[in-house]
Length: 423
Image 1: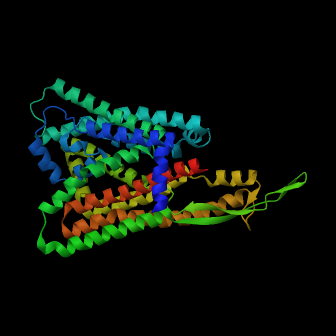
Image 2: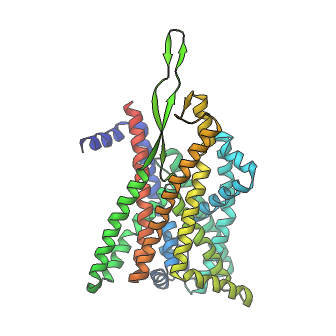
């Protein structure tokens, strides 16, 4: 406890860290203020009824940081930016040039890669805004608006999504932690009172064992996320002895830590984004006059509405994205090259390609454990919801997974900054 208090005191003593923390807090306040500014022409009563009975919109509300609950100017949140990031990451597999830009050209290449993601966000935000407003208009939530008013709303929502993207990137650069993850985290925390009140007002005394079991699951999930996030597999590394003049360098042994879950919470966010974006487009096409387009869209939406189909897709997407994001962000060849250049080697393994293959083999096994764990925890609340029929459980479980992972990452970032100051 004393150590924790000392580190908190160091946050306020360190001028740089204090500025970063304050910048993050101010950015979150601005974000929450923007989430309270609604677009014109909203029927609030119909909107609340629609949100209460629609899991799709509930999950979308998580990504918008609660901005969807009152149709604010940032109702899309960071969804378009996340979708563009997914598309760009997928393109690195198909385009060697983009892969080289992201992995081999250093900071300048990654900045250019991020710029492409920002540019792609603009049309994606426009399409999502247009589709979503068309869906709401079909539900009678937006009525009495002229074509000009609707066009202005689409442009305002697109601009709001770009503004949130910019705020998230500023938080990453000048604040503490990952800006996009923190914005989603802030939105989840802001919706907690609504979720709790929903559970209270729909409380059924006969369901007390179910509620108790759910809270036990929450504790176990939280503990499991912390354990898996912190778990790592140390690979022993030895530095060869080098004689320079009268001094001997190297000869020490250390280890290379490989985390069980290298991807963190990103696979969950990617999977949800990839599930939500097609549904939004399909719901828009379901209102088309063309019978073929309407029937195909309705069929796919009905299929996704099946809880078990949705859970299987969710699990598979989380599983695949865990492997995919780990492969993009962790390069065994680069690690092997750096070890060889530093005069280090893994005992019993030859330097060069054998070292790279050895690290890749261990990483694949570790990622399997992390991917199965993340996928299982992601769909567990959906299974509980299917059994109990309580919708808040499904949304709450996904939110809990994101919150715990983001908090762990934030604590690590702050701890790293404090440790730097102590040294």
